[in-house]
Image (cartoon, rainbow, N blue to C red; front, side, top):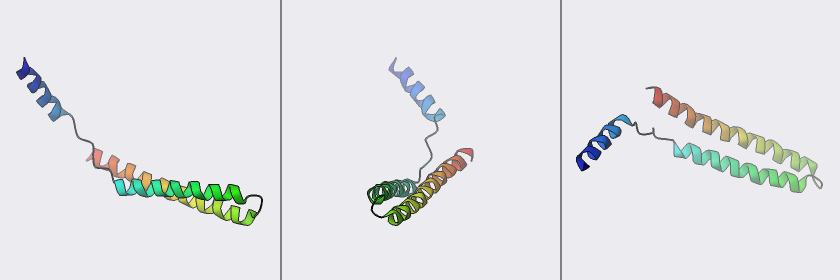
Length: 86
């Protein structure tokens, strides 16, 4: 009985493809961008009444950080998709 389990495990081991490597550095960069975005938005909220110009600048910077985070995530997705199709 134990031999059959080993045969089945060997079959599935060969049939299952291991996930492709994910660029963790890119994901960490995206995470850092999101964290900075949170900080910038908090600053914008705090300064919204007292210094609208500073608040607006924080919002612009937050938008840039969001764009950077999306770019990093899209690069990881693109690399993963490319590796899967090869």
